[in-house]
Every structure is written in structure tokens, then in C-alpha cells.
Length: 300
Image (cartoon, rainbow, N blue to C red; front, side, top):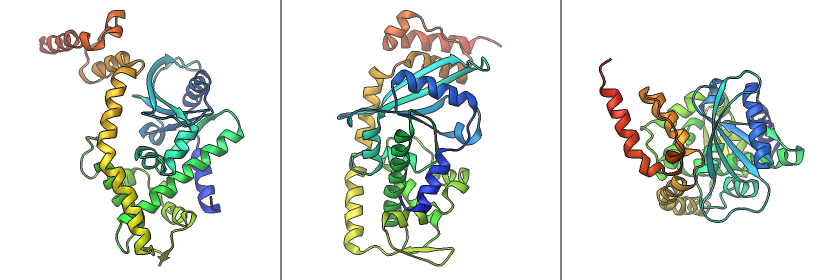
């Protein structure tokens, strides 16, 4: 990392979060035997505990093969306040996270997600924390290289970030409305202010800078190499996402509780998670949907 990017990444990951989030992350991290836990998503920005809190637990050991991460859903009452907290908890090795952040895997989700804000809310030790900081910096460098190759010959930094996020959203199996890239930048202006310049310098990508606009100076051969790297991942993006969704259907720990919470949140209909429904979620689905339909048809 160059000094500017190192300073930015360290400050971002050390940002203050709610004590409930820290307590939850510590419990989750210690239970998983993790090296560190990252907190991200809209709740990081708003400070709210409503909805589902999003965590990534980074584990020791070699990089995984096959599909990852493992995802689970948890609910419990906070030890300090008694408030009911809900978490979606992804687990993967720190080695795989670093590999994906650097662009060495076929994945597009890690570097595109973690060039956006996150916080390291728990770490086992300083060595683990330092490795996470370097991986997040790698995510910024990977994203900045592609942004420079996809963006205009000359433009404002936001033009390059928009080109990047438009491309990555199209490559993944998502239902995001058009213009999602604008809302990412609008929601996090301080985070992205100056980030592209720092990341390009750290990545060794030359550019002209007139203060308000930049003009990447990428050699044609290097640009082709970056775009070839991206096109390979773009072509596989939707298939990889679909495979992960199929896998999650059978491996998402706590999925029945998560679905029951989502149904009640969106319809107001409480669904009891019985042992049979937990063991046979697909068989239980028609009965649950029938209950929701009947409940919503009852006169108020």
C-alpha cells in the first residue's frame, strides 16, 4: 500500500460502530474461530440496528476451492440492551478473501463489494488485522484498475466509479434497479472522495490530474489485458451467482428463521418455525404460503 491508500483503508476499517454490533461480531467471530469480522451494508452507514446486520467472518486456513462463502442467519438478544438482533453471517477463509480481492479468482463480488465502505469490528490480533487491511487495499486497487479501463478518456472520478458499478451489477445475478451506481456514490460521498486517485497511485496506473478531472494513461496493450481479464469474469458472473444461490438453498443455516422473519416483516403475518418446517423447508412452503394468503384475505 502507498501511504495515502493505507491511511484511508485504516481509517475506514477503524470507524466507530454501535457497541451492539461489536458485541455481536465478537460472539460470531469467536464461535467461528475467525481471524477477523467485517461489518458492511446500509446499517453501517445509518447506524441502525433494524433489519438484518451483514457480517463477513474471515477464517484461518488455506483458500477454499469450489463455491463460497458459507452463509447463515442468526437471531438473539443483545447482552447489553436485551434488544433483538438479526444477522446474516458469511464465512470464508482470509486467504480466499485476499485472493478474490486481488482479482486472482473468477469472483467479482469481493473487490466490488469491499471497495465500498466496511468496518473491521473484531480481530483476533494485530497480524490478522493487518492482513485484512492489505486485502481491502487490494480490493480498491483491483476496482480502480478496472474503473480506469472502463471509464472515459477523461472525466471526474465519479464517472469511473459509475462505469465500474454499472458493469459489475450487469455481470451479476441481481435485481437492482437501473441507476444503482448513482445511489452508491450518493450514499457514501466522503468514502469515494479521493479514493480513485489514491488507489490508482497504489496500483501503479498513471494518470493526468487537473484537479477536477483525471485522464488515465493506460497503454493500449495494458488496457486490452485489463478488459480481457474483466470479460472472462463478466461472462461467468451470472452462472457463478446462480450456482451459489442453488448451493445456498441447501446450506444456508437458519434459512427457515430468516424466511419467517422476512414474511412477518413484509406481510405482518407471523409464521411459526416448527421442527418439521425447519427440517423440510421446501415441503413446508405451500402450507406457509397458504397461511399467509388466508391471513391477508381476512377482513381487517
